[in-house]
Amino acid sequence: MSSLLVLAIGIALLLVLIIKFHMNTFIALIVTAVVVGFGLCLPGFGTMTLAKIPVSIEKGIGSSLGELAIVFGFGAILGRLVADAGGAYRIAHTLIAKFGSKHIQIAIMLASFIIGIALFFEVGLVLLIPIVFAVALEAGLPLLYLGIPMAAALSVTHGFLPPHPAPTAIAGVLGANPGTVLLYGIIIAIPCAIVAGPMFTKLAQRFAPDAFVVKKHLEAFGEDQHQFKLEDTPSFGLSVLTSLFPVLLMGITTIYDIVFNDGKPFKNPQGFDGFVTMLGNPVFAMIASLVFALWAMGWHQGLHNKQLMATAETAIKSIAMLLLIIGAGAAFKQILIDGGIAAQISHIFQNSSVSPLILAWLITVLLRVALGSSTVAALTAAGLVQPLIAAGGVNPALMVLVIGAGSLAASHVNDAGFWMFKEYFDLNVKQTLQIWTVLETIIAITGLVVILILNLFI
Image (cartoon, rainbow, N blue to C red):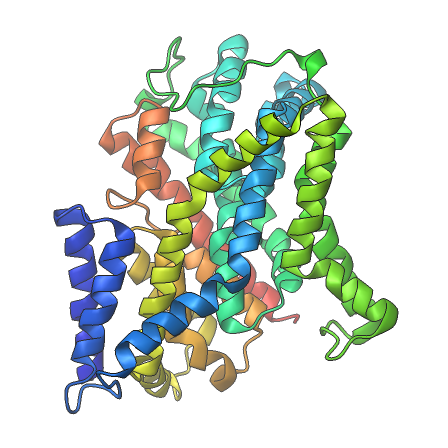
């Protein structure tokens, strides 16, 4: 148990550095990884050596950022192209007009889900808030009545669907097929969005009625917003196709594997098998999707390369720190693995009657509550529960998704998403805890339940 004491001290240190001393998360993670590494060098506390500490850090960062640099970089550019060209505006406007006022929550949720696949959570929130606010104002509805389904849809794509940071990075750590994670992730995300969106809205109106008021003005819109005329934006079909292009490519490969290889990836694919396998590789999927987006949202709309490259530069800047944080989280994870903590946790639970999926979820929830960042909590948990996959015979894709579910639970004051939701929806801290924290926890619990049901059939 001595190595677990080192882990507890490490997590406490990370929490203090981020919350108390407001240290940059990337720096705090690296410092914590080094301190935990030193602790695991002590006799009887772990299997780490002093010489191995920098090697483990380098290995963790290098192994995690290999494909992620292209996946996240190109993914961020694709999402920004869709947003800047007005594609996201077109998607939201068309679905709202199609569904009508009676089913406006479903329209907002569906639009947010589609846009959320292409955009990171924070970017999606900044982009959609003005659109949702305008719709709510026109319909005479409280902003939260539409905002909760929007936030639920954005959150489930962030937690469950590649190419978002957590599911993509964890799939790499646990050796899961990203296409399979995507397929199962969509099956899990849909009921989670419905329960935490329209269904939870009815409950929230009862226990936080003071938050559901019609507002004529919002203070915080974040960055400057583009103003679009509908006739100047790309068509609905082209906008949806561009947003979902990487999903379609990964989906083609996954379905092909299910039909022709019993759902397993081909070990040494040749010929047409190799071509289809290449399509679904996240790196190729993002490269092909970006090339298509440059045409669909750029050249086809009459935009010049200078404008497109300005968009690309802005997008890359927006994810630079995220990539560093993911790399640092992976370094911390590697220290835990090389220092013997992951193996010890596996040994503790190897005779447990509790499902490895539930254990992984609980570990991730505890890390999420302590650390705030869902991505950092997910990556740390992935390193800890990695041995449980082989020991428990768990499907790696489901393990990725159950960690993703746990990483969304109980967002509170140490999570940036908590404060974004508070400011954008003009709430106080109590209201944000009542709505945002509960919403995220509902997604986490619903996700766990659906995954456990899915596990019975896979």
